[in-house]
Image (cartoon, rainbow, N blue to C red):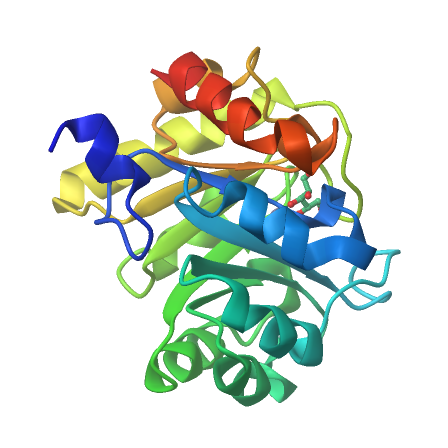
Length: 233
Ligand code: DX5
Ligand code: ZN
């Protein structure tokens, strides 16, 4: 099996390897089964954006939808919780079939939330908005399976990549290297064939992409992932 074939395997690729995570946010919500089917052989993870209309000014998917789409694929379900009170819903996400939950450091209670995610058998991620400094993430680097550096202000797809965030990705990458840690560094927002290599050069290995994958419809999604994967290397 080639490296490329290994990366295409559904399931749970090992930490550190390049992963393309299509974001369902840009898919047709009336045809989520079709969208998942279109990416399931080519994607590494499926990114699921949970917005509560409070932490961000938008309202999207909750645990019932995660449970409904779970039977359509064995892809790793990477749930990005843009919520003020994620702790009240972690059990529900675990029951719905989430494989990983990422909470935002800006909501506080970080240690408890990360411990709870892991206690529920999920991988624990910690996200930071573009204007949240590396120093807010640093104390938690030994407690997480994934660090998410937002490359747009969360809430909506289709925004422009904020290149300045790469300074933070470089700091996270260096801090992890000095610990001998190979946990995932994810970037989310404005990832395209033009920006993917900028993010991987800074040290990111999980690329979330919404409009770049689903922007031209599910029929083009598979090819869009292939293009992103090539552009990232
Ligand atoms: C934005 C979400 C992203 C979004 C990215 O708040 O967290 O996951 O889907 O969309 P694109 O790739 O279109 O910037
Ligand atoms: Zn996201």
